[in-house]
Length: 150
Image (cartoon, rainbow, N blue to C red; front, side, top):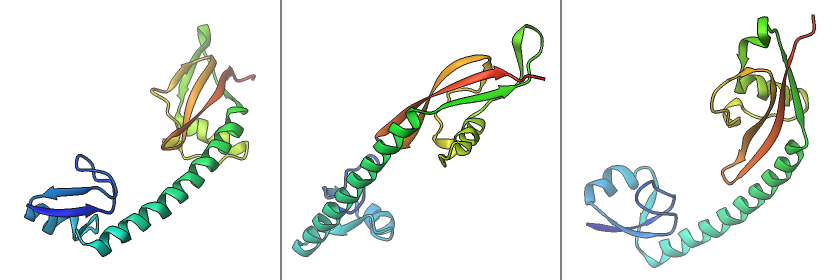
């Protein structure tokens, strides 16, 4: 067993700055080559603490920007028109890519994978769709699926 200071959050092991004991092989073959951890020394403790402070400041700034973006996106209402058949059944469906494209037309560049649509929308109506703009910030937008006027 060897003691290491984590430089990054490692799934099922610990968070940045934690001192952990791991098997020699895990440290030598995985954590150290990927620069996820450092040996425990006083200099490394100071280094990891400084990295943590810089990262926390950057993350706080990113979160603030994400909250501002979420507030602006929440004001947007997207209208997506689709062809319909009998009984107002949609031809096809409205996907997260369609919603991302509609947001792009309104000036918001959101990746389609950030649109948290559980399954494609297959009917007319109004829907609330969550958009994950940051790890801790999710915006809700209104999407109206309407019949395409021929």
